[in-house]
Image 1: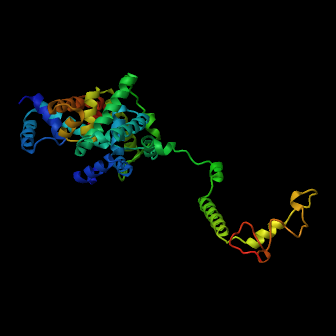
Image 2 (image 1 turned 180 degrees about the horizontal axis):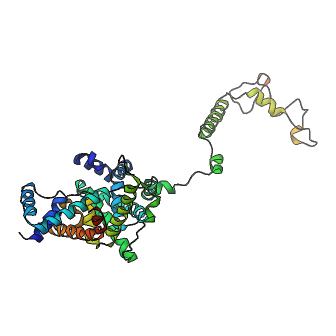
Amino acid sequence: MPNDFSPSQLKAIVERAQSGSTQDFQRLYELFGKPIFNFIWRLSGSGQEAEDLTQDTFVKVHSELPKLRDPAQFKYWLYRIARNEVYQKLRREQRTSVVSIDDEETGFHEFLEDDSPGLDPEKAFLSKELRSVVQNALNTMTPKYRDVFVLAVFQRFSYEDITKIVGRSLLSVKTDIYRARLVMKDHLNAYLKRDQ
Amino acid sequence: MTCQERRLQISEYLDGAMRPSQVGALLLHTETCGSCREFFLEQKKIADYLQAADWQLQPPAQLWDRIESRISPAAAAAPRPSVWTAWLAPPQWGYALAASLALAILSVSLFLGSQPLNRQLLAELNAYQVDVPDNPFLAQPREVNPFFEPLDEFEGNPFDPMRSPK
């Protein structure tokens, strides 16, 4: 995981990858591949597209890596490329937000199962339903709300880091996250009422 | 600060992005303002739901292989040696053997060429003549070669002024 490396260690790996070390570039994939994959999946709503776009992202990173002037900024640069790949794909396809209750495309992926002890079947079912509702809510969000919301809530980036990735002001990021929360609230109303 | 601004702060607080010095004032406000308290509780519950729904997909194991094949096309495009070309290609030791043989032949040639000329043998070879009729070189019996005479019986060689006639 990226958090296991100090910034200086990560910087050294990036510098060696910039010099052409495939081994170090693979190391970067091992560190960031899964988070990037999940980030793209949250933005695109499709497991298959997440695979393709993760490939495209890392291929592009490999070709552009020598141009990265500050290796310490690699993480933000990587997420920026991933985000751009998603939106370029969306622009090409000009797709509209399609809400799918059953996200069958993700069925063939390996999930990290919820291994909480004592999780009964009813709760497991509700958990699966909740996940579908959350993903549907993300799919219906405006892209500018969706990417900052995913970065803050699921990727756990600080607001300052998010500004480096999306290239917007801190106030704009805060405001868009707040608005995304309102959208999420509308979709989760059923669950809120069920628990009351 | 308006309630709208407070709600923005609530969102910030739930993401852990709020400065500690501002948290106290916010929580105090939510205790006194009903609408803000309701909003805070709703958003807190949503944050708990999102945490419960924060599952991670595992990327396919072969994804790195696909990436690697695209970033290293040279390795993928390198032609594999054919069985036939490998079989016909001379082995490395063959070149060394050929060079050794050439050197040996050259050495033998130089050795043979350095031996002194056997004049006796050469004379005997010169004495050999084919018996051809009317051969102008056979005017005398065969055992007498007009072009060869033993040095011991030589007398009066007109071409050797140094030798005195017997």
